[in-house]
Length: 303
Image 1 (cartoon, rainbow, N blue to C red):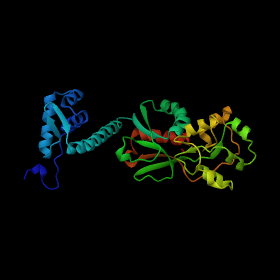
Image 2 (cartoon, rainbow, N blue to C red):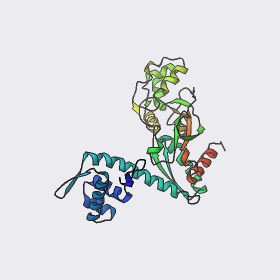
Image 3 (tube, rainbow, N blue to C red):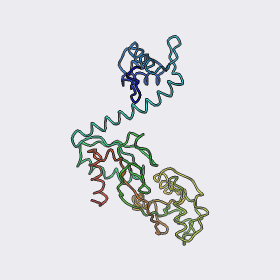
Image 4 (spheres, rainbow, N blue to C red):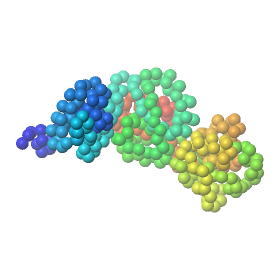
């Protein structure tokens, strides 16, 4: 028996062969794969042929000068592509341990990021000029093992398997509307607000219901109204007079100061959920994560 295939031991193909195969499968061409990898077409062809021989599976159908991935090739390419991406991300993360500088790949909630975090970032950059932050938008929790991300800012409960969480802050939810809408409809009691469209935020489906129930009102219209994915869109729809929005107070402070939005009835709802900094246990000593965590906790008055 070939000792490479002995029980308990799997012969893993070389990275160069896997990279050549993945590029060829993605382009459907050995020539274009060679151009991308700065190799000759013959070198790519040999790498793929060696890989097929090692696996004992045909990965391409070859018809004249064209190559098409077989079903096995398509499935293998998808897995290999994911693996190569994770290896690249792991390499970048490992390189970040060179001194205190590095790159932080951070997932943020879009409105929290633009309204609260980014205006404060100059202070972080001044204190840590060697750290570069790359941003991605994530509205719901995700699997760190399958995403090239080092940390995230999450809203919800402190539940995220395999990760460290630091509570940053809670929030007060308040109803807001354009002054002209309030004047036109003549709100004199919370129940009057039900005459206006209730703007919905898709990641907070119970926001209106919670507020109405706290005021002793039936939540029958709580989910009736135009729906938006982000608080920024909801608040701008309210500014435009499309209806009433129910939003965290700190995310619309600018509009409240400018007078483009008002709070018809300052009866906030608070809950147990909050904003958390989250990062996987494997990255808790990453210098960029440590620097950002310590700075963020200070910004929130927690350190």
